[in-house]
Length: 139
Image (cartoon, rainbow, N blue to C red; front, side, top):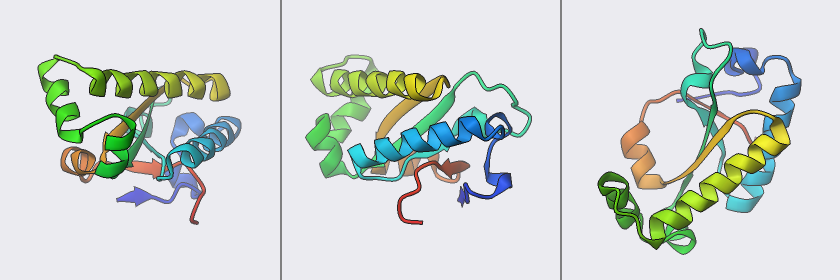
């Protein structure tokens, strides 16, 4: 279940200084404009005892048709992730994730781990995980 990001309890301790929070949200709004889907913070940065996370896991979930247009077949992407035998599908995805991670760092100075998942995969693998919405679209 998403946590309302504008409430103090939704902001992770490592982002409570305000400046980092504004920078990551500003960057997330730009990412939202590129992909057209909500942008989520998840993972270890949301653990309350973690005042200095190693990285900030930023995720977005694309419907299968959108994922296919950007990278290739979502089933092929998932299979290649398990086998390690990458083709164009996985390399295009990896290049895009790396590019956005670097852009996130350049704009926020936070170690951003950015990844795009096919919607069905994300729902299956990460159902029930805590996350905070970063972009401000649709509020």
